[in-house]
Length: 241
Ligand code: ZN
Image 1 (cartoon, rainbow, N blue to C red):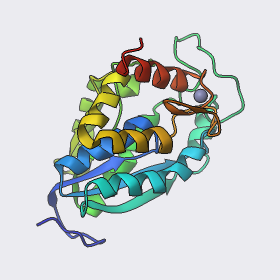
Image 2: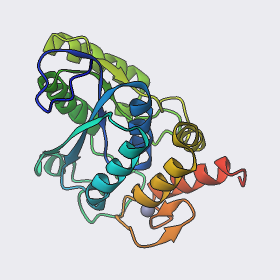
Image 3: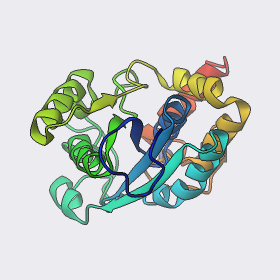
């Protein structure tokens, strides 16, 4: 039996911690985990991000997705990483700088090593909570050039975390080889129209934090890299591409 207590003791094998930011990918991952595992907790990070609106999207979206898989969703955790990532990164996600491509071919929204930091915090939390699987929505397919989203990076992180924490965590990446169209298709398969509608209306991807302009694929400025990916994936999924 999974431990539904909010202070689980010891190891809960069929349990997962989902890195849940409130965006399309992590919302899809949350549904993916809830469909598979009887007990799922979520973690989000506050790090001075420009699109902090995603943090306010999290609770209602999380609640809505949880209702589709009754009795499985446990505690939510929001870890405040303070200004450290902003101070290190000084990129467009955490300052008012314009989003553009850098000389390295990376969008200026790139916060160096962000996903490595997130995974490390998530693993430390999973250790304390007795959760075995860590689920993250990173993806190598619709690839923005983030090297910490690569499959090899994640596999290396899993090894490092298991050695460093003396655990047997499994880092799961259901979207690694799916493009955005396939991510919409997966949401449809997992939760049908209701889940697709929840993600369209309730999730946030836009780097500029625009949550007032509505499109058929959801809210956003429509032109930043995150909006462009999301819109293109939606159109492809709908067969309009
Ligand atoms: Zn946008």
